[in-house]
Image 1 (cartoon, helix red, strand yellow):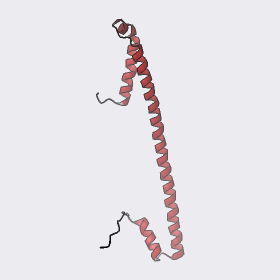
Image 2 (tube, one colour):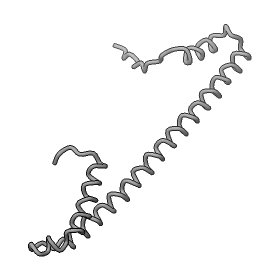
Image 3 (cartoon, one colour):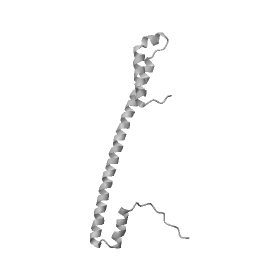
Image 4 (cartoon, helix red, strand yellow):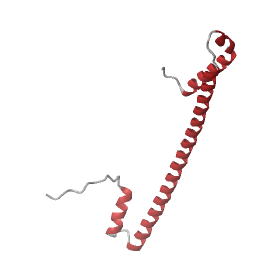
Length: 118
Protein backbone atom coordinates (compact mmCIF):
# COMPACT_ATOMS: atom_id res chain seq x y z
CA UNK A 1 0.00 0.00 0.00
CA UNK A 2 1.31 3.43 -0.86
CA UNK A 3 2.19 6.02 1.75
CA UNK A 4 -0.99 8.03 2.07
CA UNK A 5 -1.76 10.49 4.81
CA UNK A 6 -4.52 9.72 7.24
CA UNK A 7 -6.79 12.39 5.75
CA UNK A 8 -6.22 11.09 2.21
CA UNK A 9 -7.07 7.55 3.30
CA UNK A 10 -10.24 8.83 4.99
CA UNK A 11 -11.20 10.79 1.87
CA UNK A 12 -10.54 7.76 -0.33
CA UNK A 13 -12.84 5.54 1.70
CA UNK A 14 -15.56 8.21 1.91
CA UNK A 15 -15.43 8.89 -1.82
CA UNK A 16 -15.45 5.16 -2.64
CA UNK A 17 -18.59 4.73 -0.55
CA UNK A 18 -20.31 7.59 -2.40
CA UNK A 19 -19.26 6.25 -5.81
CA UNK A 20 -20.50 2.76 -4.98
CA UNK A 21 -23.80 4.19 -3.68
CA UNK A 22 -24.28 6.29 -6.80
CA UNK A 23 -23.41 3.38 -9.08
CA UNK A 24 -25.08 0.61 -7.13
CA UNK A 25 -27.35 -0.48 -9.98
CA UNK A 26 -24.50 -0.59 -12.50
CA UNK A 27 -22.37 -2.70 -10.16
CA UNK A 28 -25.29 -4.99 -9.36
CA UNK A 29 -26.02 -5.47 -13.06
CA UNK A 30 -22.40 -6.60 -13.47
CA UNK A 31 -22.75 -9.19 -10.70
CA UNK A 32 -21.46 -7.25 -7.69
CA UNK A 33 -23.92 -6.07 -5.05
CA UNK A 34 -22.05 -3.27 -3.25
CA UNK A 35 -24.50 -2.99 -0.33
CA UNK A 36 -22.52 -5.27 2.00
CA UNK A 37 -19.20 -3.65 1.13
CA UNK A 38 -20.69 -0.16 1.56
CA UNK A 39 -22.00 -1.10 5.02
CA UNK A 40 -18.64 -2.63 5.95
CA UNK A 41 -16.68 0.43 4.83
CA UNK A 42 -19.08 2.78 6.63
CA UNK A 43 -18.68 0.79 9.84
CA UNK A 44 -14.88 0.69 9.51
CA UNK A 45 -14.79 4.43 8.85
CA UNK A 46 -16.97 5.08 11.90
CA UNK A 47 -14.67 2.95 14.08
CA UNK A 48 -11.66 4.83 12.70
CA UNK A 49 -13.36 8.17 13.43
CA UNK A 50 -14.13 7.11 17.00
CA UNK A 51 -10.56 5.90 17.50
CA UNK A 52 -9.23 9.19 16.18
CA UNK A 53 -11.45 11.04 18.63
CA UNK A 54 -10.02 8.97 21.48
CA UNK A 55 -6.51 9.62 20.15
CA UNK A 56 -7.13 13.39 20.21
CA UNK A 57 -8.50 13.15 23.76
CA UNK A 58 -5.40 11.20 24.83
CA UNK A 59 -3.09 13.79 23.23
CA UNK A 60 -4.94 16.59 25.03
CA UNK A 61 -4.71 14.67 28.32
CA UNK A 62 -0.97 14.15 27.78
CA UNK A 63 -0.48 17.88 27.19
CA UNK A 64 -2.48 18.66 30.33
CA UNK A 65 -0.42 16.17 32.34
CA UNK A 66 2.82 17.66 31.03
CA UNK A 67 1.68 21.16 31.92
CA UNK A 68 0.67 20.04 35.42
CA UNK A 69 3.99 18.23 35.90
CA UNK A 70 5.94 21.32 34.81
CA UNK A 71 3.90 23.64 37.02
CA UNK A 72 4.25 21.44 40.10
CA UNK A 73 7.97 20.96 39.48
CA UNK A 74 8.41 24.73 39.16
CA UNK A 75 6.55 25.16 42.45
CA UNK A 76 8.74 22.54 44.16
CA UNK A 77 11.89 24.21 42.80
CA UNK A 78 10.71 27.62 44.00
CA UNK A 79 9.89 26.22 47.44
CA UNK A 80 13.24 24.42 47.59
CA UNK A 81 15.11 27.60 46.64
CA UNK A 82 13.25 29.53 49.32
CA UNK A 83 14.26 26.86 51.83
CA UNK A 84 17.91 27.24 50.78
CA UNK A 85 17.60 30.99 51.38
CA UNK A 86 16.07 30.30 54.82
CA UNK A 87 18.88 27.91 55.78
CA UNK A 88 21.44 30.37 54.47
CA UNK A 89 19.90 33.08 56.63
CA UNK A 90 20.00 30.82 59.68
CA UNK A 91 23.53 29.46 59.25
CA UNK A 92 25.22 32.21 57.28
CA UNK A 93 26.35 32.29 53.65
CA UNK A 94 29.82 30.95 54.46
CA UNK A 95 28.60 27.89 56.37
CA UNK A 96 29.84 24.64 54.78
CA UNK A 97 26.35 23.09 54.74
CA UNK A 98 24.98 26.13 52.91
CA UNK A 99 27.85 26.05 50.43
CA UNK A 100 27.17 22.35 49.71
CA UNK A 101 23.45 22.95 49.29
CA UNK A 102 24.07 25.84 46.89
CA UNK A 103 26.26 23.55 44.76
CA UNK A 104 23.17 21.46 44.04
CA UNK A 105 21.49 24.37 42.33
CA UNK A 106 24.51 25.80 40.57
CA UNK A 107 25.98 22.69 38.97
CA UNK A 108 25.08 20.58 35.99
CA UNK A 109 24.96 17.54 38.17
CA UNK A 110 25.78 14.25 36.54
CA UNK A 111 24.99 11.09 38.36
CA UNK A 112 28.26 9.85 39.67
CA UNK A 113 28.83 6.22 40.43
CA UNK A 114 30.68 5.75 43.68
CA UNK A 115 34.05 4.14 43.20
CA UNK A 116 34.44 0.66 44.58
CA UNK A 117 37.34 0.21 47.01
CA UNK A 118 40.03 -2.08 45.71
